[in-house]
Length: 431
Image 1 (cartoon, rainbow, N blue to C red):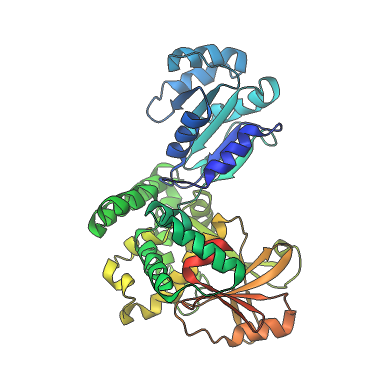
Image 2: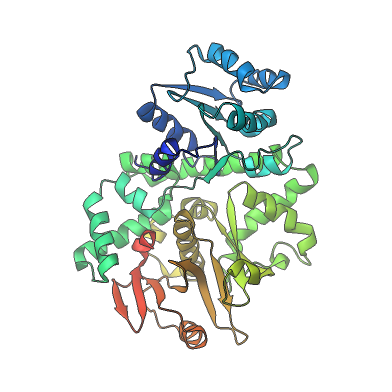
């Protein structure tokens, strides 16, 4: 299956300023598969080391972490000679060996000709609690996410449809209605299946939603296990409570996160560590309210007002135990949840494309779902789950801040009207 990370990895290999690469991201997003596939295609050989399946590796790094010492030993363990620039060295599940992370500093400084990629599922958490120094400034860092809508469609063989969507996005011209309907149905399939590579592969092969759901449930269980395994004892229950409650909060009309909904009388001081753990693990993302629309938006975020979205729509549906057909036909019983689920989907697509998202509220209650910086301009993004797209909030925002244009994402076909770029939900990956 095609992953966009491949073009990044190719550019990393070719760069004169290449440093050891840390590839981070939530469990099961395809990090190991991608780096092994990249190694197979771009190098003469691959030396792969997994700190989870081979705990004895830890011993090697306890004694000495200079490249001169490590390379002969690692060559022996791998059963092949590690050659500068021709061998890709991969350290997997590196969060289990903090000294291996520290060694990257010395590979950068003393042996830059060795190509190294390290991958880990809970690196954000591990780095936060590390007892050894993190190699700040001595590594490249890239976050990997679940497959986006474009990768999903390509995995299902809809290459020409993707090309057509991109063409219509660039020209603001509507898709032929038959293709628009097919793409809309694929968008709903994506909501159910999500972007976890194993789930997408299963769906592409079988079209069996029960098999996909079983895999999603397994991934959710592994997340819960991680909360116990890589967490402070006092925080385990709070982290699980918070994670369970995020999907509840997405069903509210106002999706702003409220501590009191986790438990009666809940406060920030009690749950902020749990939220931080979930964010660092890549399982969720936190987006803040921008109090003023000025650059840089980061300077104007309200740290007490935020929303939390989960990293994958398929896991969101599995967590809520939603039947596939209910999503595919958007039944009325889902009305309370549709808005939050659609916002969550859009946030995933924007995040994959490298946007740092914020939201905005006026004093009188007008709200814009996302504010992004696109091509140097601050652009409001309004999201609707259906094709009823009238929005007083967007009008208030545009009258107040006079943006170059606005983006409206909904079930409607492509258009450009009233200074708004109208984009169908399935085309969010084009932004």
